[in-house]
Amino acid sequence: MITEMNRKIISISSKRQLTIPGAFFAKLGFGDKAECIIRDNELVIRPARIESKGEFAEEILSDLIREGYSGQELLEEFKVRQSKVRPAIKKMIDDAHRMATGELESMSYDDVFGGEK
Image (cartoon, rainbow, N blue to C red; front, side):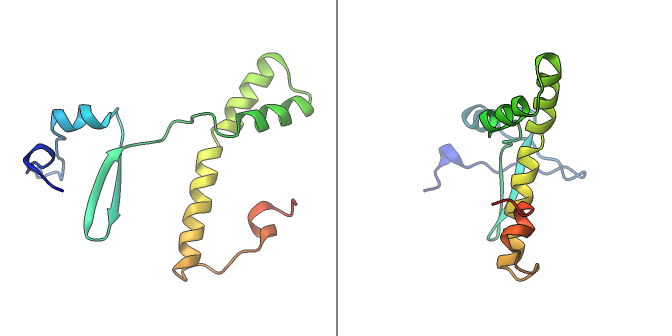
């Protein structure tokens, strides 16, 4: 339900910029990035969830150790591989959406995962 407490009319500058009201900014936990989403006939602006939260960390470390990495080299390669997780997941989600809407042909397991089973 929309109330006076969670609704505010804001101005949009000539450069298409807007300012998020301070109370909204604090309550929602915004940092220095925002994510914009079109949903139905609305623009949703919410705190960006860009930074990695450790997805697949154990699996990545296990693979790196098995591959012979250790010490500083292990740490550097872990950072490289960890940084690729979110973009890969985003691409899979985007591709799934495009397949669901008919913009992209369906893909097989091998197409998605490179033949690993």
